[in-house]
Length: 125
Image (cartoon, rainbow, N blue to C red; front, side, top):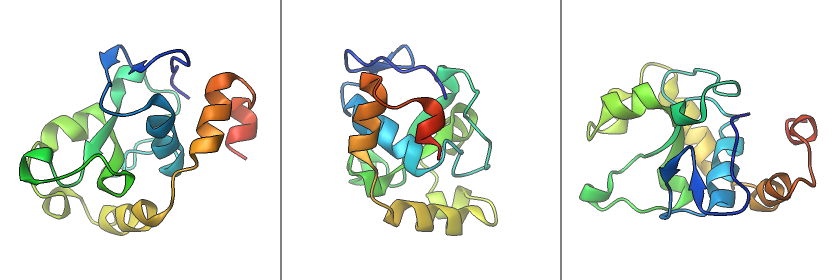
């Protein structure tokens, strides 16, 4: 799992003031640390490579609600830009995204991980 800062609102070396660190981690966990577009396993990726993507971009009225956010590798997130996600997502990814975005992110688990109360091994079980 990429490293996360537990004592602040910064993650991956970039500003993430728009979303709480615990919610960001909860969305990564909800999506099993997989890029929702290409399916890349991001567990051992550099923290810079793990991003959140807005399905509906903010410039088109998208919000920061978890149902509008998915885990994406930096490459897919950068390449997609403002292309509608259904047009960008390859075959199979649309179903994965629809399935995962219906799931409620486990924020209490994310907070426990950030506090150090739950290990990485326990979290993936």
